[in-house]
Image 1 (cartoon, helix red, strand yellow):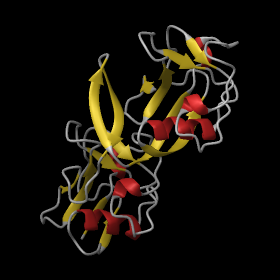
Image 2: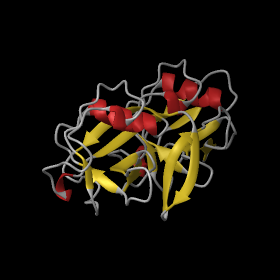
Image 3: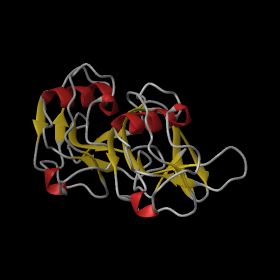
Length: 232
């Protein structure tokens, strides 16, 4: 299984193929729901699914439509363990290709396959090179910047719903004991590049910002005028 057509590794059109030399094909959106999406995301190393997308949201695939009328409980370890109409049995067109958005990465291993990057497993380490503060005149304050992996460009976090609990998790990742302030509306200047995270909702006990609830990588409705900052 893989995700194709999305801007980030955690979202895209669901594509599958039988064992062997068969071509990649798609999954029909008939009856496809969050339980089915959850199984797809777990197969790819994510904690859960945030959303399923109908009607070829990530573009129409090509080739075979392999699966239709998926009926997962959400507890299966593989999509192929779920009920469905049988391999290649469907009443769909590629305008019904289903997609998913996954959230809460744990382990990450990236490899290049067929000119695309597919996430198989993820690692976000506290204090790693995937979070930093920029634009502040001291090391303990600045605009929060993150990236999915070392090979990605740095991006920012939107200030929607960002509060002291979220800031506390950021500061702990950077080696500080706590957060003293949250700055909204690009107080440390506007960043560039992607806005990776929006509507972050931490409890304050997480060891990584990426373990908190949020909209999913790159799902946002913000401008860089809303880049959030913290002081640790």
